[in-house]
Amino acid sequence: MARTSLSNLKRACLALASVLLVSAAPAAADSLANIPNSNAPDESALSSFSMFAQKWMAKMETAEARNRENPTVRPGASQNLVTYRGFGEDYSVELRPTGHPSSPFIGILRYSEQIYSCREVAASNCSVASSAPVTEIFRYQGGRWIY
Image (tube, rainbow, N blue to C red; front, side):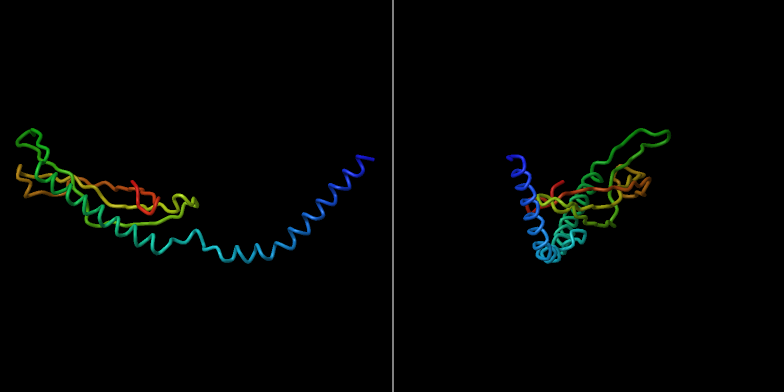
């Protein structure tokens, strides 16, 4: 008899759970409709990352000026080989959602790194000897962008 009543109790619980789920389904559907599309970048996050990328590229410009002031000099066959590392002026930004509340977005910054070759140590008459694409990835966490 204990088995029968336990079995009946299980059936009653399952029936009650089914009724509760069916009655809650429309409310759940309404609340899901109010959730923003997590695949669409947040405009304030995109604006924030654009400003961050602008500051990052300003740092790269400062690094390039420092590199130009102190170029690498190597002995060559007929004259010294003078080079320094710089960065292209053009860059692009991209924002992607992560799906994680603690770090909701990653920002992707793309630019080019250039090696300049110069005719003299003063690094005034230089041309791009090589160029390579650079991709930097940052995460948005705690209200700021982190490398």
